[in-house]
Length: 261
Ligand SMILES: [Mg+2]
Image 1: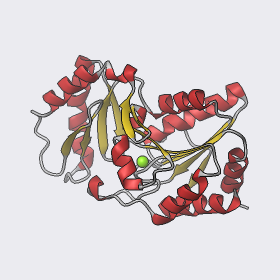
Image 2 (image 1 turned 90 degrees about the vertical axis):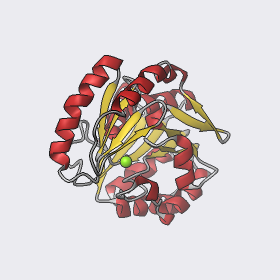
Image 3 (image 1 turned 180 degrees about the horizontal axis):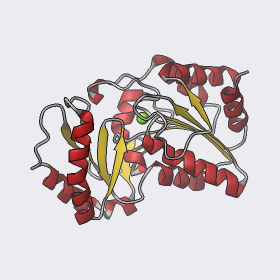
């Protein structure tokens, strides 16, 4: 058996365990227009099958939780959105009360960014508790990113917010409210004994790190799986325990787990 599958299987046989997955670039391919993303049918069916056998199966996305649920289309799993700042409870979206304290700062930053000249191929998305700028369509992403970051860092400093980079997306968010914080909250709330996490982006490396620290300090089981991609290649601030090649490999891993557990 391949070592990634074996490690995930062992962790998920612990009680209570959680299987948490990122969405874009993990269970769906990255696409030019995020609104056109499609979750792999094989991933969906595997998550559906695993939901009855593991204490917690959830999706942890940078998108709003309700939007993530719309794309995944499963009722029996849990959703956290905005890197954990919002979540669905009984189908209703709720927001982190702590993160909500920054809503005024995020709104002011969004207003200020609205006056910046993004040029063609980039667009601003206001998500309530964060502001994202997608620049997959710009002609020169390297130069565009540097120019925008030098401006954005000033806005972030003025509003007391944090800059977060992902795959051709740059976000402003309340400081410290990332996926690492989210997964730590989930572990405490669910009193988990094991977590398997799969993700592809820089924001996911916050989870890789949080899980590694949790494992070392508590003796709990954790397995992090990074989805390799040319945009992040080697730039995970904290590397995953295992890496898989692409979304196809994630689909295979989830399907294998659905058979094995
Ligand atoms: Mg992703």
